[in-house]
Structures are given as structure tokens and as C-alpha cells.
Length: 176
Image 1 (tube, rainbow, N blue to C red):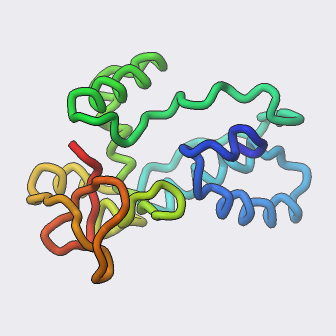
Image 2 (cartoon, rainbow, N blue to C red):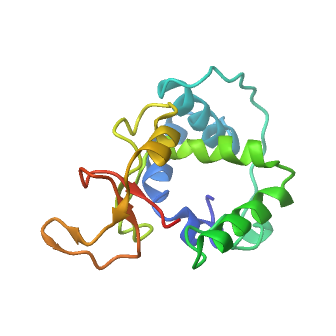
């Protein structure tokens, strides 16, 4: 995700902020590979969010440019037009990588972390009330909350892609 074309893919929109922050670390520690640096940043982020401690080893090597990037479109899309199509699309993407349904559901729980930004994805808002904490809140809210189609944002008509919001208007969920 360091080089184009991968750095400019829609699925990686917004990661420039993280890359820029990690570039400052790289300047102070030029001996570490970008591959190790990016991986370690993920390990630390998971631990800081209350997730498990993940063992880490150095030794990854960097590519010299983006010529070996995999093709675009291999990440799951947010909305394929219907619940059935989106569900099958997500399954197809993760089945290709050897995941089963139970593992796919566990991975989707990572939505408990972070938020959507209109300038990156078109969607807006956090998935949970504690967006920097690893928890099962995403799943609990998905099942227990009454979601309605988002119509307004900051007092104006919502003009982004279809998304749902909770009863407080503070949380978001993608189309079903």
C-alpha cells in the first residue's frame, strides 16, 4: 500500500494519513523495512485498542516499486446493490483466501474500530460508540439497534451513498 497503483485504490483511501505518520518513524529508524513497520503499527494498534498481544518478528523485505501489486478489486465492496449480492461478494472474496463463514464474521468485527470518512469512502460516521476500542459492540449494535436510512447530515440532506444510522444519528451501518 506504499506505492501506486495500490496506494491510490479506493479500498485504501484515507491511508495516506497513516503512511505519512509512519514515514516520520521510518526517518528515525531507517534500518526497519516498511513491511515490518506497517505490520508492527497494526500489531500495536490492536493491542492499544484492547485486543490481544500479538507476537512480532522482524525480517520482512520491501518491494522496490508498485510493479508487483496485486490487481485492484480484491477487497470486499461495501454495497453490491442488494443484501444477497453483497453477502455473496464478501463470501467470495474471503473464500478465495481460505476463510470460512465463522472466520469471515470474526473479521467483520474489526468494524468496531474506526469510522468512515466521506472524503475517503463516501460514507460517514463511526460503527460503534467506542471507535478506538476492540469489542463486540459492532455485533451487538448490528442485532439490537433499530437502523434507519440516513436522510440528513449536519442539518442538510444526505447526498452520500445509502447508509443506515442508529436512533441517535451518531452511528452508521452499511446497506443490508
